[in-house]
Amino acid sequence: MKKLLLYLSERETPKKMLTSISLLNKVTKRFVAGETVDEASAAIKVLNSKGISATFDHLGEAIHNEEEAAAEVAMYLRILDRIESDGLDSNVSLKLTQLGLDIRQELCIENLTRIVEHAAKNGNFVRIDMEDSGHLQATLDVFRAVRAKHENVGIVIQSYLFRSEQDVKDLLELGSRIRICKGAYKEPPEVAFQEKSKVDENYLTIVRLLLPSGIYHGIATHDPAMINGTIRFAREQKLDQKCFEFQMLYGIARDRQVKLVEEGFNVRVYVPFGRAWYPYFMRRLAERPANVLFILRAMMKG
Ligand SMILES: Cc1cc2nc3c(=O)[nH]c(=O)nc-3n(C[C@H](O)[C@H](O)[C@H](O)COP(=O)(O)OP(=O)(O)OC[C@H]3O[C@@H](n4cnc5c(N)ncnc54)[C@H](O)[C@@H]3O)c2cc1C
Image (tube, rainbow, N blue to C red; front, side, top):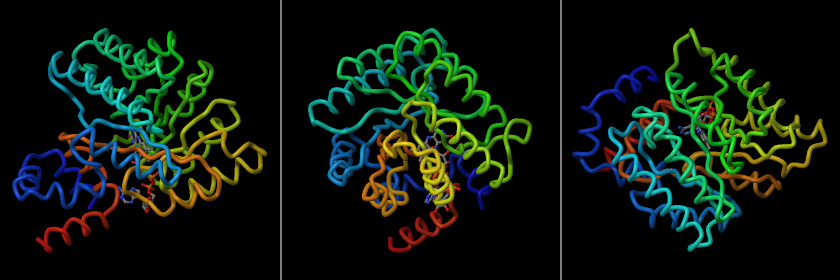
């Protein structure tokens, strides 16, 4: 099933099928907060009312020219202003390919710097999502260049990659805020663990490096074993349970998000919105076959 979905996600036909029969509203709304800043802001207000923080993510990856990258920068500046004017408890997440990483590294650094400096004016924070391993080194290089001058920017590390433990050690020396996740892309056996048990083991190894570091990190997962492993370790080490935050995706494990807040943990939900919802949506389907049944049921209801 996972292979089939990854295969489909790389092809146009299912995209046309889904868009042409206007399923966007019915099925993507479970995972995507809408197409506009207004819709995303409304979704974040609901989360905030439950004591959950958020991170805005304007969907889009692999833009093709400098004008598109400039439009993404403008969108993020707008989002940061909107966070202030609406009084939202939210920061922002972005992908460097949105900002021109595939065009020119210098351009990407300039674009990211503009967003990070704008965020700093209001004491806000910018998280760089991690993309596929082909973009990993360039993403780390851009992060380091901007982090050298600005503290309000953080990075993501994926536990499925062999190199991640060493990357985390290096990044902690810089004082970097890290989001640890398992990783969402199809990666070859040359660079990534293929077995879930190894990905999970590495995830908890990295959690054990992050939590005692004195830096505020994000533990991004819906996996009860990872969540419980993190809580157990924090208790063993007698760490303040507010010294890190759990992070989850919009529409996934919603009851658990609320339960963790009730237990006194910080929780942040990643809120994607925008018209370029397709690759994000397909990655969410590929993660869980049950989501495909959800889509099929929605299609049958017509
Ligand atoms: C806040 C956040 C930010 C992320 N940022 C990045 C990033 O920058 N780069 C990157 O590569 N990946 C990112 N990811 C995705 C991540 O790498 C995983 O692909 C995803 O979180 C699934 O892994 P899991 O830890 O939930 O564990 P899994 O073992 O995949 O899932 C554990 C359980 O969680 C539930 N679950 C997981 N996924 C779904 C789903 N799609 N639909 C419904 N239920 C589900 C199911 O109950 C499942 O059994 C992010 C994830 C989160 C939560």
